[in-house]
Length: 333
Ligand code: AMP
Ligand code: TRP
Image (cartoon, rainbow, N blue to C red; front, side, top):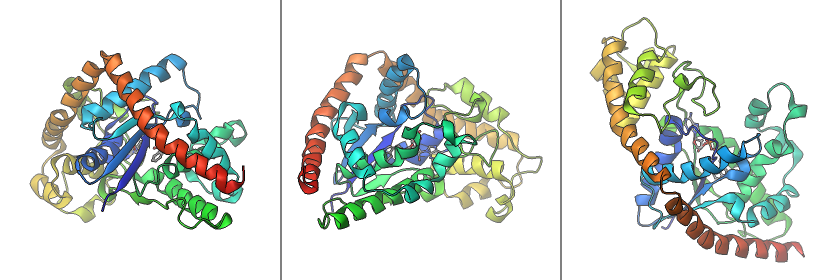
């Protein structure tokens, strides 16, 4: 059965190993399956829910495209475009914001985390962000949405919004209710400095993450400085429960080598961290260094990147504007 895949990544800079293992690696596999129709969106409208520098934003949009292509997404096979070029996204988001309930949005934990203590000062956009995300997905009748664990709640909201629209207007199955695709094992890669915190673009310390633009030397340096604990590596998974940093590093190794966590634990049991870290740096730089080099090369060819976005826009716009037109008719405009 053909799967219709849709996902988005914010062009907010510092794309990192968490984005890669939690999302982009999966995009590449889905892109490689001939049966699938894939759309990958650079969600610049989502990015401006927190303040952005215009010059950096423009650069980050291209860098996100470059990262997609450098990681192995084929723009000939998958549609790649940026969200702000297609007005149907903001239009559908408005319509859906009249369907969604305040109570539903009030439950969103990402807003609470991002807004912090002073919610009064957060933008309205940050609050209604999940509605725009629902619009992104529903405009393309996506059947599957590959994301990291942190987006699960937003996807559940998207499903609720689709069902409510279909019920309210008595249009069964008009908005397709999508399924999440979450790589359970690697859906939350943690900070290298604190194994209880998610690896994040916005963390001030660059040592907390492996960026996809890092070269071999900085990867080695960051792994050397990554937080660990004084014990040798464990002999079984259960012993990892209270050792979040060790668990995170072993999971990263397991993901990159496609070996099960059990197998990785067997290989390194009883060894000290310095030996394991050397091996981990090696597999990390084998994977990330070529992507990093390719991103840098592609960033010197802005015309090529802009052409990908233009072609993506043309294809995506046909689908989205047709869907939003149908929404207008259903609503009574
Ligand atoms: P964002 O950078 O917030 O646009 O996220 C892009 C994608 O990466 C989303 O699917 C996220 O769920 C995923 N992601 C972000 N951070 C992590 C992380 N630390 N571990 C796993 N996946 C992540
Ligand atoms: N909210 C997602 C994130 O921060 C990005 C996103 C926007 C997205 N629209 C989407 C993901 C649609 C999947 C589908 O990671």
